[in-house]
Length: 349
Image (cartoon, rainbow, N blue to C red; front, side):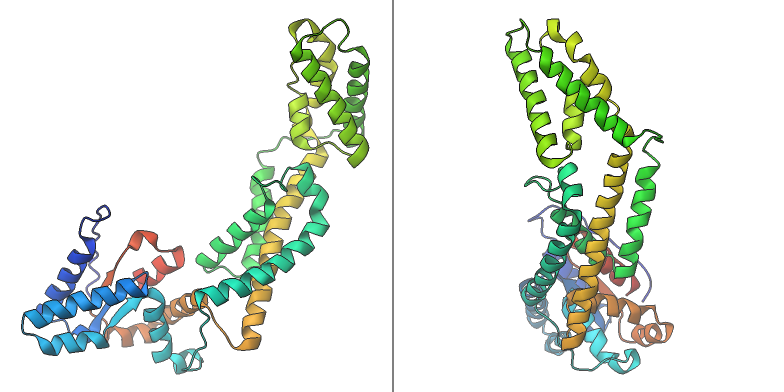
């Protein structure tokens, strides 16, 4: 392995796969043993097509021996190639040579079932926080954030413990952007509620414009919500701080503007933000932990586990020395679609 790295970038349909197969054939013609070639793609179909192209070209050139030997090379999907590494180094890794690998569908089903149970539990504990922050709506559902964290954590080879630590780190980063507040939360609530009640009693007055009528409707709706739930959502506080009746009634709503405009200083808002961050990361961490435990009980691994284990294998200097005799050239198709974990693997080999 020379360490030379070449990247070929082109649009769809430009002939990248044809170029890839040509490069592999040229490498073989230059003396690299076909069985010492690593070539990874993202789908089994693409891998089969790549091998077929290479074999046909080699057979057409009269090199039947190399056409047969390429079948012994490391050509396939990333998971099939890295899975083969794990089988070949199973004893060194303390693994069984026969690995029970979950299909992508089975892994997704098991993972989603476990994640759904954990999410339901956390929703019960943090329901009011999510409601106040509007994180329980169709367009902004906290569950989607949990699933994003889970996906990114696994793609980056993170452990459940590391994901837990992300909760503290994320809150630390957000807190730095929030203003310090010494406000009394109860007093802030009371100021806004009193302002809403007072303004409701004087509007619309003689103002029959649509703008003022809409403003009155917002005030009444806010008071009903407060009476029913015991709180106002934070987006309602923000909306009230910009309440716009007709111009002649603007002075009447100034007490509402004054009371609502400081919502960003409200200690309860800061606490809700902290709890929401905590809920998302801790929920993701628990789901990861339970998923790992369930796989362990059944003696199973999934594709991401394969990649994580393969990276551990490649970090071992003795294993790398052995691989230097087995790998002479590496080709990666659709490199731009690789996850961070797959990038680390490809760069290692």
